[in-house]
Image (cartoon, rainbow, N blue to C red; front, side, top):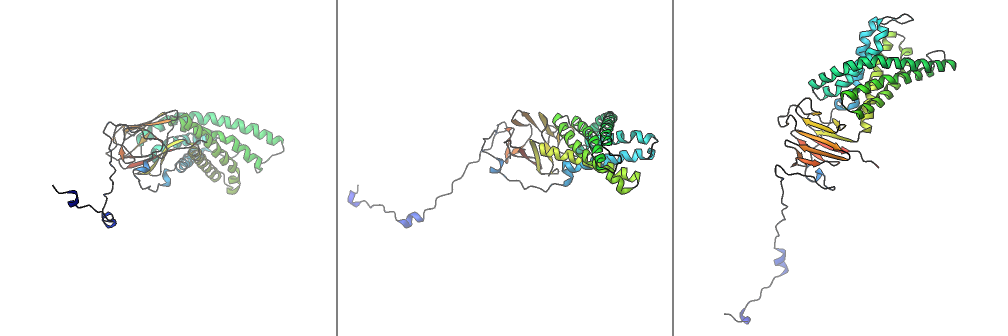
Length: 351
């Protein structure tokens, strides 16, 4: 055994330390099991895991656009059917009687089916059209009567004030106020076929604003065109467009929870979460219908709302931030992926 004096001391120089390479730490990745529940924390967001390139959405998928187009088409269709039976002057023909109710009816149908057509859910569109038709007919005649009463009362007041010609802007305002009822009818049907009182409320508000603006410009259009049939076609078309655009803008401005499609065939579309339970799947009757994707089950997931809590429950494969998820309380900014679709969950922050 060597003596202590024979033992060589170990010397470590600065050069030795510099030459030592420390392997980079590896952060283990934990993949939840098939039945794992991922709730996350208040500080977690999907951006910590994965980023999905946002696709540019089509203007056709914007609510204000397709509702405005629907209102225009519905109004023009109603005018085209009734105009052959319409006469200018004191005499009345069948066209004079049905033109307003018919326009309201066809606008209501157009509003009811427009969203389903955009989502390519033809079956849902047909079901909604079948519901919107009798509602539109009923509301068309009822709301025309209400509008006539409002117009007569307010018209009498401005007449007493000395207004005796439709060229006076006071008459334009009176017509606008009376025609707000027409827009409200479209909003009522829009909410009923969408099975949401809140959706109907937003539709009534937006529709009334749009119809009011359209009613104000109706007489100026008549003065500019000098032809009764042309003025009615242009005027009603603009009223229908204004009602639809107003409904879409108000609905978008007042929404509080929604899914925004950032990738997939419906990129740019927003699905506002009105109902206490919103279904997602490949069935055309689903609230959020995802078409032409074999990865999507008929009833793939459900989003339920209870107070301030928004809960996702997925029965099929869904990714949250790149990780499989089955149950999760959704938070603003969460990124969800389902097949070729990607959604961003958004909430409006209340002050």
